[in-house]
Structures are given as C-alpha cells and as structure tokens.
Image 1 (tube, helix red, strand yellow):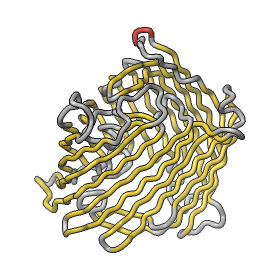
Image 2: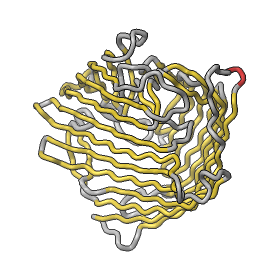
Image 3: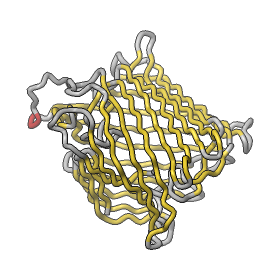
Image 4: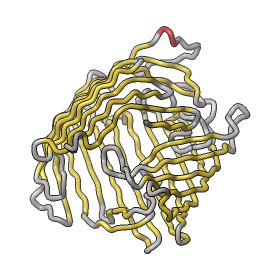
Amino acid sequence: MTYSTAGGATHYGYGLHDSNFLGLGKTIKIEHTSTEARTGDIIQYRDYNLCDKNQLILGYADNNDGKESEFSFSKPFSSIRTDWTSGVEYQDFLREDTYYNAGEEVYRYLHQNAEHSLYYGLRLPNSSDDNVHRLIVGWSHASDEFSSLPEFNSDLDVELPYDRKFDSFWIEYSSFKNSYIEMHNIQQINRTEDFNLGNQWRLRIGGVTANTNQLDKSIQVQLNFSKAIKISSTQMLLGELSSSGFYTSGDTINAINQMAVSYHWQNFSRGQFYAYANVTEGKNLFDDMPLELGGDTGLRGYPVRFQAGNKLELLTIEQRYFGEKEWFSLFHMGAAIFYDQGRAWGESPVDQTYNKTLRDVGIGLRISGTRTGGKDDGIHNVAHLDLSYPLDGSADIDKYQISVRIKKSF
C-alpha cells in the first residue's frame, strides 16, 4: 500500500509490488492508484538482468481519463568499464491535463503523446578507471496533440497548447571523473552514502525536423553538470546545473536553465544544518509545461500547483536531527524544523492570482526503514510527515498543511 498527501492533494495506491518475484530478481507491480488528477490500474514488469545485463521494462495503465503504455529494451553502461550501450524505447499516453491558478483547476484539456527513440554508444578509448568518456548517437521522435473537452468549458479566454511533432537526430558526449568518497548522515539516516567529488557532465546536441515552423530546423541542446565538494569533515556542498531548449537563428523555444545547490553542515553530533537553493528560468515554454511551485514542489505550507510561470526561485533552510536508535528493529527516525521561501512568476497559460514571494515554517518527522529499500533502484526511501504553516497569502488559504510523502532522501 502507498499513501501520500501534500498541499491538499492526496495520492494512494494498493496492490502487489515484488522486486524479487519468485526469487528471480524480476520486479512485478500490479496496483490501483488514485491522485487528484486521475485514478487507474497499473501493471508493470521490470527485468534488470535479462540475457547478460540487458534491461527490459514493460508497462500499461488503464486510467479514468485515458491510457498509458511503455516499452524499453536496453543494454546500459552498467559499470565504468562497460564498452558499449544500446537501446530502444517507446511510450505513449492519452490523458487529461490541467491549467491551475492558486491550486485550483481552471481549465482541463485532452493530451495525446507518443515518444520513441533508438540509440547506440561507446566507451571512448581514452577512458580509464579514473576518467570515463562516452559517446552516444541516437534518434528520438516526439508527438503531442491537444484538444478541448466540452464538459470543461471555461469563462476564461484560454488557448490550447499548440500541437507539435518533431524528430531529432542527436549525438551525446558524457564525462565523469571517478572520485567517490563515503559520508554518513548526509541525505540518509544512519547509512553510508557515496558522493563523487569529480566533475560529471553530459552534452547532447540534435538537429530537429518538425511539423511547425517554430521547431523545424532548430538545434536541440541538453546540458547537465553536477559536482560534490567536501568543504571539511563536517561540511558538504552538492551542486547541479542544467540547460535545455530548441535554438533557431532568431529565437529560443522551451528553454530552461536551472541551478540547484544544497549545503550540509553537521553542526552537532546528531544534527545537520541544511540549506537548499533553486533558481530556474524558462523562455518561450510550451504551454503544457509551465514551471509550477506549491505544496508538492517545495512550498510545504501551500496547496499544490499554487503558482506557475516561466521563472522560479526556491530557498529551503532546515535544522535536522538524525536519531541513533533503531525502533523495533524496523526503522530509524529523524526530525526537522524548516523554513521555505519561494516564488513562481512570469509567463503562464492562465493569469495567476499570486505572483509574489511566499513563505512557510514547519516541523516534521522522518522515518527510514531498515529492512526495506527503494522499490526499483536499491536506495532507501524516507517517509516525511510535515506540519507546515503559511506566512503569506490570503485568508482562504488553510492555516496549516499536513503532508505525508515518501522521498528518496531526508
């Protein structure tokens, strides 16, 4: 069973999930889920060691507003010494998407999507165990079609996102320096964690052909960079930079530039001072992909999707406590006092009531199981139980928000 609630939106699910089906190392999931957006039934099969380290993923969902399917067969770079990779991927969905204002639904429309890709890559000859260089070439196709829903007519003057269909033939280069260290009580409770002090970056450049003048003959660019810095035996800095978009001779479309930094300081024996900052800016974003901020994306004292735009800022400050005791031989506990401050503003498909900086404070418990890990990737999930109080906004916002969520870190 799964359950989470944040910003007034509740998600629950029940069914079967076995990450070692019949002792064969295969993952099976059969689940009924319900969110604020949709309810549905999901069946999924994952095999991470098919025929000598190949991976197979199959999935299908039957929802009340449409269907989803996915297929992936790949041979990944499973280690720094793996010589080559290849894969084929396909996914599609039919669903209802929504424009929001102040956490309230203002317009709903139908969204049909299909994406598929092929790729092949090599570990370059100049690689070593300390420095790994990889080159991948591939082709990707994406199609998005939008239509109105008569039963969701709105008095607002709202335009649908424009249909788009494009192919991208791309080449990707990635590099990372293998310089891992072990730390304790950084993002997990009472667990040894690995962090890479070396530079990690990825650059993909593709030529685009499309059915719209906005995207046709553009250059698609994706850039990612990440690095961990050990300031001292008790201080760690984690940083990420990313940039993506379609570039033409005269314009930039769906461009997103993001910088995120987190600071971790063990300021007493079982405590940590934590600060996180995220600055994101978009330009000419697709209407179905605005930057959103709310109770499920960092502003814990407010409803989900409370603000939207093409610019976003978020600051989180926490004093954390990592408990030492293992309760009932089942889990470790932690706690936090936190402050959130953020804002999403700028261009949005619908006018936004709130576009000023919002703040909240709160307290929370953290629970990390010692007998179970993450469902798919082997990490250990952490349950978050938070009580948050908004410091801004109008009287119609609830005086407090209770959230229960499962995350991958403290």
